[in-house]
Length: 107
Image (cartoon, rainbow, N blue to C red):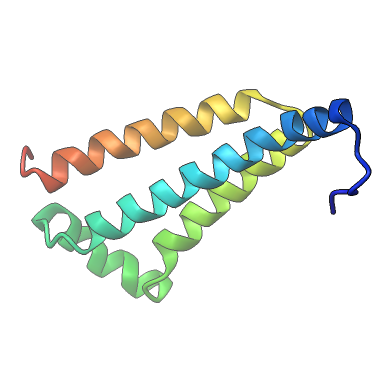
């Protein structure tokens, strides 16, 4: 919890520490949205793998995997390993390209 008596320097230091976590949170929202859009697109490549994957995981396996990746990346950033932020940003960009390819019918 933020103390109301934080000085300007303390608050900026706190914000500097929290900014990567906040950014990763929003990247996670984007990943979940792309995942849902692709899974509901009805693309033949997705439907063929979705049947087997849903049978094995009860339908929530993809979301559980996305959550695990996000949680691991946030944990690494929280302990100071900032390369995880770049890795997760790259992962989000690759997900975006893949979602665009599938949703626009380019594959």
